[in-house]
Length: 405
Image (cartoon, rainbow, N blue to C red):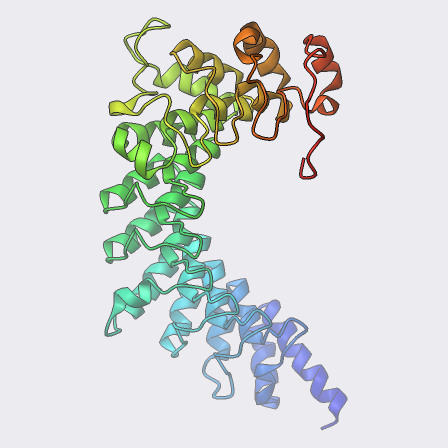
């Protein structure tokens, strides 16, 4: 047999698998059995292609041949079982498992077939894989296996909002508080990308609300900064206390609202979360801004109050709301910057024009400079027209512009 004929036969088998040509596959396999492991440019064998396409009759045709290697990996390090999990085809998964496919195989990212099935939303595939895993001595350890980012299958199910898969894994005993390499638990991911049902499910199974991911970020913080108003409302209603918000979260609920500058978020907060008693402006802080004792002047690690955070993010309505509830307009952060410094540095002209300039006397006193001896209008180049129209040109900087500005 010539080399050219051999190569053509190998390619023919791959094409036959892609086209579900069972009779042709049987003919070619009988002629050249070792062609079953022919590899294409992506390192994929006929079994890879058949599994990824969900061609169960082709998979059934290939598996009886002793020459078929079920554990060949492609250029991503994936086996045929990984591909079947990607598609979520329960019949192909069942066929591969019944012929001894390795459930522990990991690709170059450390992903097992279960990771991939959980990510892609194949509930039946997840169930079949878990049934096989239950035969292990310590099944929970296998169900909670981590990839190279330290993420478990539960992480993937949650971040893709596959509620039923998450429920299935949790009921099998998977720990909801496992953290990824960046400190993200399943609840962090649900707060960013999921919904209230997912958050409720995780908390029903013991998910902690006060775990800090990298940067001291809590689920509540991530919900607020990712425009998830309903999740913010849910978390505030279910779990936030003054101590948790002020001490463990490093930022109070005011700061979370301040950092979320999205108009849809603001509308929801104002219309849905404000105290049902319609507390008059200037009196008690509404319940959603002061849950069980969280203070309106609590600071984050940089010394920013909720008001400073709101000004920095340009949230006009939140700034207005906080000022109406008695937030200290003269407060300064660790860099000795007040709200006007923050507004100018952040180029937030709306905040300047509508809210802060009426308080100019308080903000432009003898101590108007920050720790770098810069006045609030130190960066006129960033908003030249705006600064000029505000009448702030008489306030000049007393120091050269620092190199890191």
